[in-house]
Length: 117
Length: 118
Image (cartoon, rainbow over all chains, first blue to last red; front, side):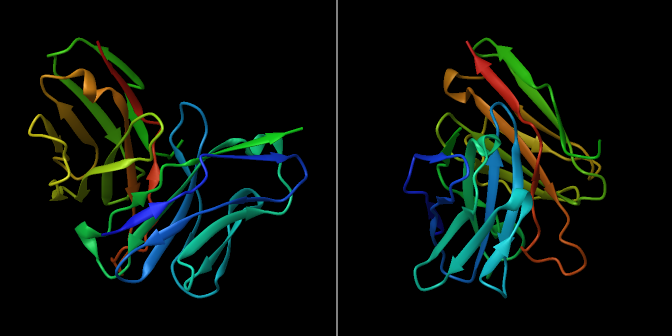
């Protein structure tokens, strides 16, 4: 069965410092991996995805994520955090060996990122 | 604005009433998904359409839940005989897999409908 784990409920970072939000996954086939961000009382906004190719994926707002197949991880990173990055971050996985109706997103529980000035 | 829209944004109802939510996907997106999100959890998949065909509905939470997409454009999610446990945020997403199909497409989410059952 597919699953996603976000081991940290909350990550606290000082503005200007690098940030990392952790994600590990489990799928039986090839993983398609996604990061979304959610602001209070809002829907999810797409940040980036890994399908294939370069293990380092760059996305919106200066975020990037590194796919590590041996560690089954897809951690989200940013070199310099902003106060406005404070939000809820969700990692999601899809089994790439399933198409159509079985290729739905499985989400982690989310990690709250708090960036202090 | 050409994003996914959902109406209403908020719905308060009494236990036992029926509610219906609407989702308008991004134009030309032929896939449409419904998710439910409860407090402190990530979105949980409910059902999925490709055009007007409902290709996955086994994840609907009970037979009180149903969804339609009659013309392959907007979709509705109905909950009959609501219960307090149905209180949650209901999210809609759409995507366009293109000619290749498959599952590499990105899902774009609407703002959600927050349901409160009293």
